[in-house]
Image (tube, rainbow, N blue to C red; front, top):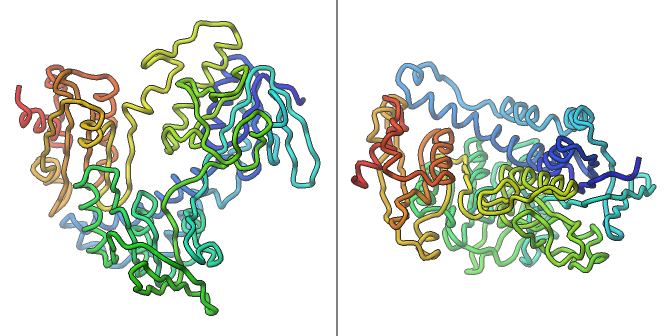
Length: 472
């Protein structure tokens, strides 16, 4: 079969979810994938990275609780950590994901997909054979993004690690240099320092500079406590891979740094360089611009959609899956001539992309945030009030660990009296984030939040303390 209602290029979490939504809506859908079914998140990002980080976090927690601390007699077993990481990456085999596609009734076409005409995708297999797929209603680009390697002299020739090579590393390098200070850079600096690497981090723009300032400051302090050399403002001018396999970096101020491996983690670039966008009048390699329903702008007939990283709205797996649900549903609705609900917070609109994006950075401490930072809220023209509270002052934190440290910030829109931003920094705060996400998405008035009573003794008591600090 080569004709479907919808053809999805890319079988990562976004493509899988979108195709599934289409099939559940009564249409047929096929996916095209040139690598592993399951995408970046399954094999090189979300799952294996968190597996790398979890063992160190568990050990830290045990050492902070008397009784458990005395039972801990050794250090991390690096080989065991890497084996666990491999299991979460399914040993880089996609049999399980392929089996799920089959159970969901979604045909898989393996190969490189290129758009050749309106609603037509040509798939070139590994053996060079070409299959032409035709879509009755829509083609969806869900090819994700790859690591951005900047134009630094000698960098590409030095074959640096990107997030993929770092996450899949079979051995822990003695010395690891990191270019970048964002999420990937901070998480991998955390993981590899705990696994035994001597890490140097070149954070030109700071550590987690897009988060609330206290978040980056706490992570940078923690990294330094682990022995990481965090160099704020430092920038690589040139890179060289030496004959013995080591890497030499020359900074723009002339300083030299030697490392066994180099991780570049400064951003992402869309995986759309060779998918036939020129055939429909779009620029190859450029991020795709979409409307609120993920329909690509500038394509006559409205049959082309883009969900996930490729549209650059939010480069997070869970947000891409959110877009996929909205886009899958709206494709079905349009195919069936049903009403479109694309208004604010409508079923067919990805409103949360702009208003309520949750994110967790699995560093020490964990950073969990949703909505706007104080700076972003002010830039958006909101009249805000910022309320801060020390998480260590909650009874729950005192039970959780000795020497617990953490911080919470609530950003309130003073005109509407609703929370528009929330950030937590502390051990295991990831599981506290969804309450804040609900408050932001639901635009729950502060007067109503007073009736959401936190259980005692939990760290979530911080909600009550923040409200008390705000006043009634």
